[in-house]
Length: 164
Length: 163
Image 1 (cartoon, rainbow over the protein chains, first blue to last red):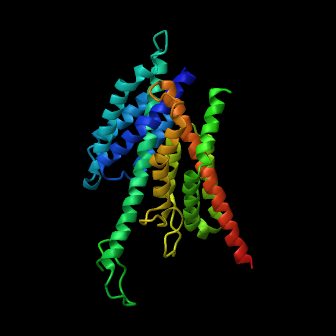
Image 2 (image 1 turned 120 degrees about the vertical axis):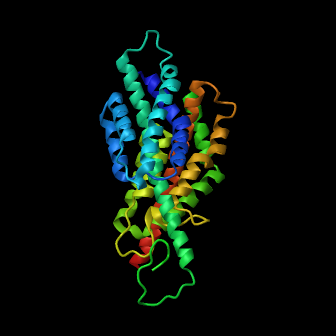
Image 3 (image 1 turned 60 degrees about the vertical axis):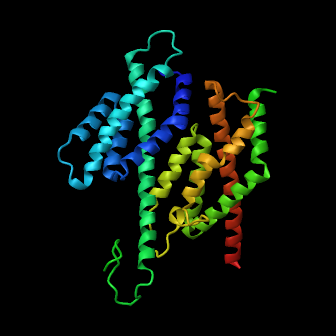
């Protein structure tokens, strides 16, 4: 069982380190992940065990069928797998250091999952936000490109590139 | 007086300062610009924000909520101008969520520092957790004040519309 003190440490870690790391992580990927992928990852992180999460991440990373426009998703899963491993190495033993007896494997797995959930929650929020801000900036860019063009009534719809 | 009581008093002093009040009132007015056209849904945005701030134990839950709201609000069909979380309101044409997120991420730092100064040792684990709590308490105060200003302005608008 994870103690209240350990839970407080996870919350602190989430606020002081994991949040910033998740923002940097998504900026490193540079391109938003589609919603169907984020929904899948969220479901697995909320309803499954840490082992199942690792298997899911590895399966998505090793998938050979990503279309060229979605290659970054593969990179996302590769980086996520590595990140989860690093979080294990860095944080698990330090969070449990107050224990007088060695922690049971079940507690270690639970703690790993709690940490992974925190990180994934921040990654998915940043992913959605990044997509929204990008779309918002694209609209602004289109509007500025279209300024000064003739405003005829029978113009065809303007595309994202500002061409008809 | 216990340390926790002292902490709450120090937080309230900062939340009652003129500088803090200015910040929350500014955010309240930006919220009015964003949500006044949302008709029956406008209050639910403020309620959602208050609920998350009042119930969470993590600052980043509030930030994640703001990010998701900024991203997920659907556009109404046939609406020419963006409304709600997607309306440009900041001094440089930022979204409400961008301004609020920034204020929570870094805009409260000076107030947190004033509460913690000579009171909390931010280098120990315990001190870091207390600092986190101070941040969260200040966010709650900021959002409460923001929502009160928002409600006040909306009531004036509704009153005017009735006449």
